[in-house]
Image: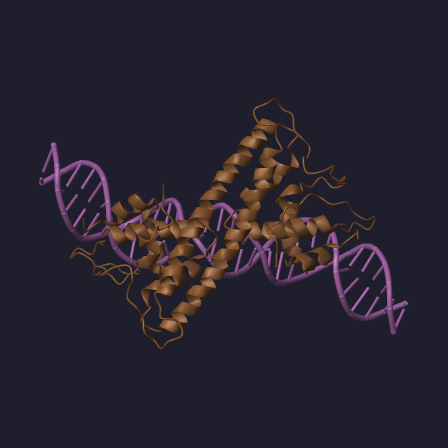
Length: 151
Length: 151
DNA sequence: CCTGGGGCCGTAGTAGGGTACGGAGTGTAA
DNA sequence: TTACACTCCGTACCCTACTACGGCCCCAGG
């Protein structure tokens, strides 16, 4: 189970070796133990960590934020109260993201539902009402139905 | 209500004028009508659109993806079935993001709850079980509790 | 009139996040 | 023992998404 090489971990996690080393340089991955030859040794934990980083990135967290998320857990012993505080800040942040995504989701569902479906190229304009005329050619629905409302 | 200048829209939407023009160049904002002097004229719609872009970006969509989202709505007349299809693909994508965020959320909540709260610097190690020893110093909880599981 | 605050445009520069490359060492299977 | 895959390291390069700059035009107020 132990002693995965960097290549093996990278393959499993779906990133390139260079990316992996880059994350290590950036402090997202701890320095692993080395073999006498100098090559890095990882365990399955590393795979999970990289995957987590990948996902968090896709969710719009910057590497800096991801490092914070990971550090939150890594040093709970330093100051628990402070850690809890930061965790709660993160929770609020994430909550907001979820809300925003749900708004987009909702808009997309309505957009999709406004199409007849498998029929030929024929669209219902907008079931929700008559709809004003826009002189600009901009799309509207994704914004008008709770446009990931800014507080 | 009409005839906002680029600066006014930018201020309302919380971006810089340069960013605005950049989005226009990138096709995220349609070319607005101009005054005789050449200056752009916008309406409130533009503010909403920019805000949508900002939020979507924070949620991890690239400008390319955001353009797709906006185009989805902008040209439903070209091919409704195809539009619906793409909308549904986007919906699935967004659904996945929401799931991943909820997993992170859950992990953060547990992490936060495992702290005594307002008490002094004293942490419960892990309420869920005895917990194995890790020889690496990496944090684990954010990954072990449904690590934004990859299908 | 003229000054200041916009706005217009094109181009250049920057930060973040990788990705590629070159040259050298290691390790293992035929 | 030779070939081949893999690792190491540092540096350089690339793409995305801005951000700044310089030079010019418009226009409202003092």
